[in-house]
Length: 212
Image 1: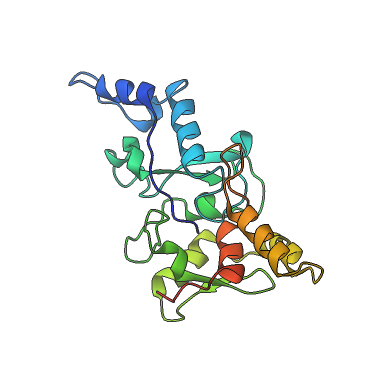
Image 2: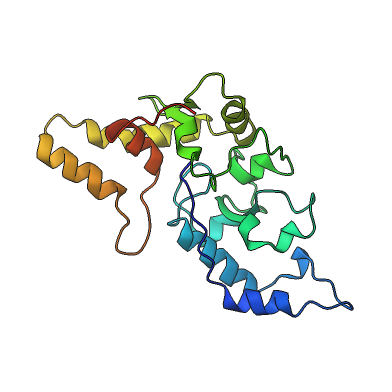
């Protein structure tokens, strides 16, 4: 889970929200294009086009606007940009296995759900060479519950993380080339995107964050 810094750039959405009045109290269901598309694009851009939870590459047709505090819990938070993220997997498509925002669904517990908006979130998780994710501190119940509820340790994600790690284990890479390879991977691309599983590579090949 990579730390996300909110950088709202949604002038159309802001104007739409400001039109709220006593006769029409807007809900999230009222949000349609072009304002909804603007919100989603802004979320994807500030995340570097990787999923807010698992860090898979986001595509517009297989992702969704995710409410960290589910909109069913708090109607006001449903239109609060600071409560919005972008998660992989479309909400309507039935691709399996469901994970991240689709697995989380309406579950929310501020004490047991690690937020990607928390600047310490990256240090709460550790990774193994076979691609598995685990709590950096084995007694960190929030990390344990987050992994479980979001299904971050399912086989498909473990396999993808393992494949992301493998190129860095090439023995042909000498020290200088290796550092360039790592730094290049962790640097934002020219199209303003991050590479998948950023924190996994950072964990293994830059420094292992202290357990939180």
